[in-house]
Figure 1: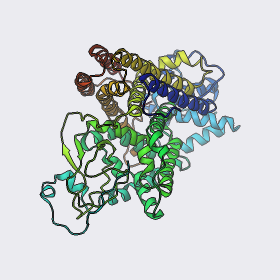
Figure 2 (figure 1 turned 60 degrees about the vertical axis):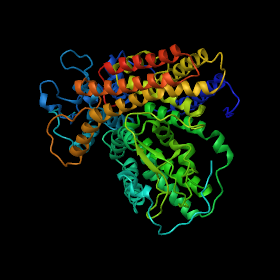
Figure 3 (figure 1 turned 90 degrees about the vertical axis):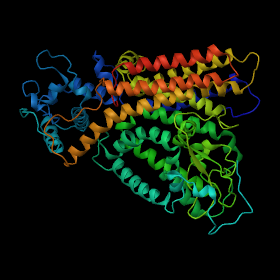
Length: 150
Length: 439
C-alpha cells in the first residue's frame, strides 16, 4: 500500500485508493468464496427470490426438498389463510398454479424452517424425524398449519 | 500529534468565568461519573450481546445481538453524531476497554510513527472491509459474524492499549471511529479548545486541549474535563452547518474514505431496493452462483466508479494548480451529501427494520401475545412521511454540498457542481424507489 502523504499528485492518491479498494475486495472475495450460499446451478427463480441470501438459500432448499416440505407445517402465522397455506411447501409454491410464491422470500420463520430442513436432511434424518424436530423447535413461535404427517 | 500541557496545577481550583457559562453538554463532560458510569452500563450490554451472539440455538434474524447492534445502535449513530458529535467514541465500550487496559499497563511508549503515517489509510481500509462484510455477510442477520466483530474490536482496543499509550485502536484503526471522525464536521456540538491552561490531563488521542487544532479527532472522552478540574475542552452549539477542516485534518486518506463511504452507501441504497434482486439474478451465473461474491463484486464496482469519477473531476480542475489538496477538497464537497444519505438510510433502517424486529423479539420471548403472521422485515414499501423526511435530508445534504462546492477554490465551478448534482440525482432515484428496511 502506498503510504506517502506529501509531495504526490491527485492521481497517485486516487490510485492508492483504488489499490486499497481492490486489495480489500480481493481479500473479501477469497474469504467469502468458500462460504455462504453457493450452488452448482439454480433453477429459473423469479426476481423476488434474490432479495436476500437467506431467501435464495430457502428457495434452493424448497426446490430440492419439496417432498419433505409437503409434510412440514409452517409456524409463521400463515395458518390464518388456511385455504392457501397447508404446509411449508405452500409458502414457497402456490398451491393452485404450482409457481413460486413470494410469501417465503420475506418471511424469516419460513426461511429458518427451510434452513433447518436443509441441515437435518444433510445429517441424514428421515422426513418423519425432520417433522418431529420442526414441531419441537418452532412450537413456541405460533400456530402451525394443518399439515398431514409423513 | 502527541502534546501535553505542562507546568500547570491541579486540585480544587476556583471556577473561571468560562466554567460558569458551561452549558448542559459541557456539564455532562465534567460530570464526576462521565464516562465511567456509561462505560460500565455498556460493558454489561456488550457482554450480554456477545453471549447472545454465540449462544447455542440462536438465530441470526431476531437475535438480540444483531437486533441491538445493527437495527438500533447503527441507525441511531448518525443522529447522535449530528446532535452530539463524537460522544459515542467517548462512551464506547471498546474505548473504555482501551482506557482500562492502559490504566493496568502503566507507562507505555507512544504509538510508532508508522501508525501516524499509515493510520488513516488503515482506518479507511478497515471501513471498506467493514462495509463489504456488512453487505456481503448480511451482518443484520448474522449473529456469529456480529459476535466475532464485537470480540475482535474489544481485544484489539485493549491489546493495543496494553502496548502503546493512549487510544491507539480508536485513533487509527477503528472503522466506527473513522466514520464518526469524517462526519463530525457536521455535528451541532463542536468541541473547541479552552483558554484555561490549568488542566493537566493527557489526552488519549494526543490533542492539545488549548489549541484543539484537529477537533474532529476529539473523542469527547472527558479525560481533559474531569470533575473539579478547570480547563479542558468546551463545546459550541451551532446547528445546521459545516465546519471547514483545519490544516491536516482532512487529508487524502480522509478524502478517500469519504469516497469509499459514498460507494458503500450507494451499494446499501441499492441493496434496499428491488434493483438488488435484479442485479443478483443477472450476476449470479457469472460468479458461479456464489451470492457473497456477487455482492463483493457489486460493491467494488460501485466504489471504483465513484473513485474514477472523482479522479476525473479533480483532474479537470487542477491544470493550473496541480496541487494535491484539490483531491481532498473536492472529496470534502461530497461529504454533506453523503451525510444526508447516511441519515436517510439510518431512518429507513429504524422505520422499517427496528420496529418489526422488536416485535419479533418480544413475541419470541413471550413478552407479548401475537397470533397473526410474524412481521416480515424486508418487504419493499413506500411510506410517504418517511420519503418526505428522507428527501428533506437528501436535499439538505445536496444544498450544503453545493454551498461547500462554492467555497472550494482549487477546481473549476462546473465539475464540482456536476459531481454533486450527479451523486444527488443517483441517490434521489434510489430513494424514489420502494425500499426495504433490511435484507
